[in-house]
Image 1 (cartoon, rainbow, N blue to C red):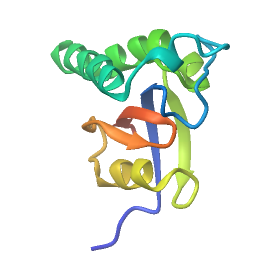
Image 2 (tube, one colour; image 1 turned 180 degrees about the vertical axis):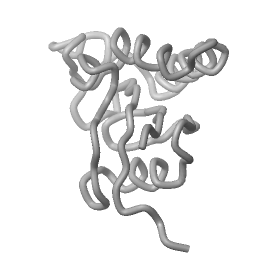
Image 3 (cartoon, rainbow, N blue to C red; image 1 turned 90 degrees about the horizontal axis):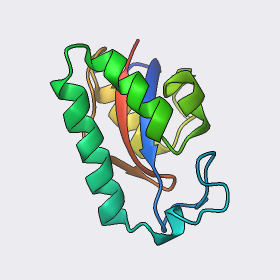
Length: 122
């Protein structure tokens, strides 16, 4: 079985006190992020996922919520990371993305950056 060597995806990242960079565009000083436990980050993330999968247009809802809540600068593009090849992303993120069918949304993915949900778009 050959894994796709490139993919296009969007993600929603929630950082926590264990994240390698505990600050973001929403929280430049990291005041909230440094107080947030990993369990709290997962709970927030899974609430967003529940809202996304319940929406009539999950891809649209994903982009709306990522734009508002993601701790990644990709939030300004609705979470869109554009295309990437193997070796460009952290391994757990890459593995999860390549395992998804186009249009599918991942379960929680844990990386050094924080916890993510991923929407594979191509």
